[in-house]
Length: 307
Ligand code: UT7
Image (cartoon, rainbow, N blue to C red; front, side, top):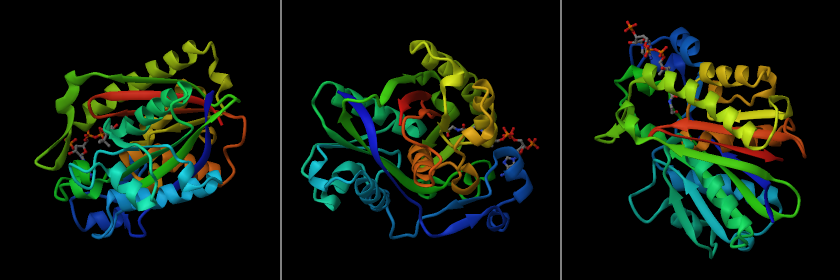
């Protein structure tokens, strides 16, 4: 059996924080943030909102759009770096919220978490272990930000995205590729519950690594860049996204961009972007989609799929 996406969902907190709002908090400007990152605003959760509550809303949306019942889900994987607590896992809290009786666990691969989760789910489906996997990327980064550090606090936002991946005879996930290299761990980490990043150095490694990842993914499948209909990248920086699009000779209108409105929502960014483009009709049945991400660890990975 193949693994095919049969439903997508998303949730963004109602509260919007604009670049102009940030000008009143730290020494930054709307112009700097837009020029260096493409970000114009981000969503920030209310105090009562948690990673699991956002994950629950995105999951309800995804299960509804998949046109199945909660009981049909036989595995739950949540990709997050901002769990509600160390344990129980956010996946177990979500499982209880949805009243689903299925194994549930979290995956932590920072901004590449959703790609790792898709890769794991694909293997569970291909081996016949699972039929309908709920995969969620959910993050509350506002909890991890040092609101006096302009080099990081302007970059991130909160939200959750979800997909239902199902066993189907027709082609779905074509291949997945996951990687890690721990030698760069001090360039982007969380110490004392706050994000620290050497942004410029991360930027260079991200662009080079994602370029090689595109080659690896296409070569593995004997495909040409012209075979790709849509790029749905992790949304860290519009300049990184443009470099990946250039590598694929794709115009920006074949790239799903949400970083302008969502900022970087880490593991949630790809499922949120995917959900948006599926729901507004841009992504259509049978199209070939490349998902790719790069994040702390470093971790990076891609999923090539036929929608
Ligand atoms: O999602 C996980 C992976 N993360 C990423 O992929 C992020 C990768 N990195 C980036 O996206 C970019 O490196 C940043 C957006 C984080 C920074 O952009 P940059 O063009 O690399 O800027 P920079 O760090 O080299 O800083 C340039 C200048 C510095 O001032 P000086 O030293 O030139 O005087 C910074 O202090 O910009 C200054 N700066 C700011 N100025 C206004 C840094 N942050 C801000 C700010 N507002 N918010």
